Length: 181
Image (cartoon, helix red, strand yellow):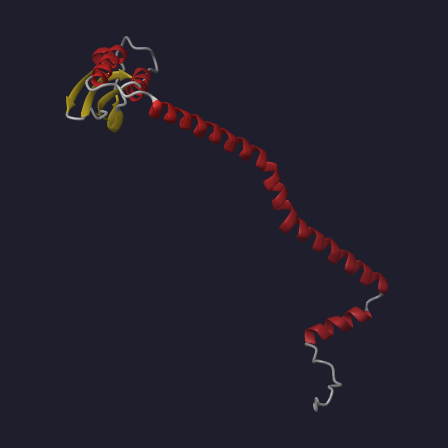
């Protein structure tokens, strides 16, 4: 059995809370209603500011983010399809990859490029090579000869007087890994 006597005195009230209760009791009912209404407005504004506004802002921006992620997904799927196509493509026999690389280099870049082969690496030296032709050649080198760029040291070159205005040209070297023979 519990032998403790029951406590009859209420818990002590902090002085600030006691003063607030006394002030509330002295207020007229109309003033109490106005204070409650003001507190409700402040509470609703705080609820909007902290909980609802950020969620609505996220919702408004989600369409653009969704479109960007969809575009990125499509690009990644295209890259995956290209990688699978390259993987499944037949490998060129021994010296055929090197001949294909040299032929496409001459066709695409002409005298602007020279290639030296040492073992399983090809070094291409560029002098005023047009950027678009270089990009096309690199794409062909990767897809037909299975050559992979390992290193590129390129700088913008001054366009010759007879070149189209705004045409980008490159000087430098490219090192490509040739497929195993």
